[in-house]
Length: 275
Image (cartoon, rainbow, N blue to C red; front, side, top):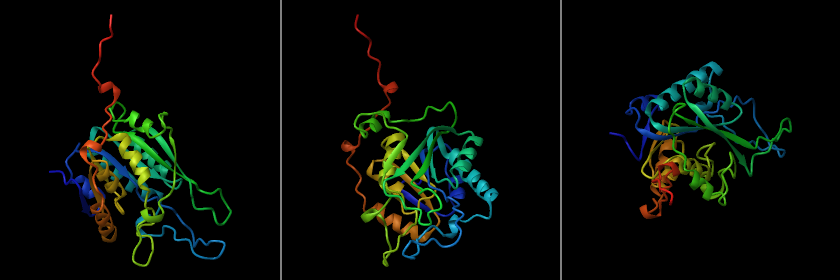
């Protein structure tokens, strides 16, 4: 039986391999970026920037990262339903390698979405352009898959205009950002709920199962619950698990009547023309 609305603790690849095949409607993945950072980063006032220096983001070389990417994507593809789809987010450090692996495994890329940040971190050293975006790849399970896309729902979010592939949204900050008792960020790369809202609303229906193999602080689960979707989170860090569970427990699921389902127009009954 599928462990719906639960956080499973452990290695995401092993956990996905234990799930039934073709059992999940949507996978959203925010994997380690393999940032390859060198040395400390300081602001002009010489305070240290709290970057991502956690062990989970470190790999010996690109070959090791590619093996890891292939392994988790292979596991994710096995559990996706034929009409399911996968979203994966990354930066210039990893997204090109991720995209190549996707294609090698048989996924069919539908879009790359550019998340333009309204409030990005500046480039303090002044040696490069300010890195003001991240990229998401949206992919069907294979070339001929009848994937789900809620076109009208996305259009309604965009003043009744067709939604484009560049999304202007702020980074996670303020009250939405989870912090520990000392005021430090619980997770260094927590994604904003507004981003997951668009992802989940665009490519799933109420009651669908959304799985996140790198659950972190549970943004995917919180938004899925709010939108009337079922969710499964995979996470190996106990600190993140506790923070995510407390966060999701506090979320109120929208009443069933308030959850909009937007079936694709091709699924609507045909009305014969007059005459």
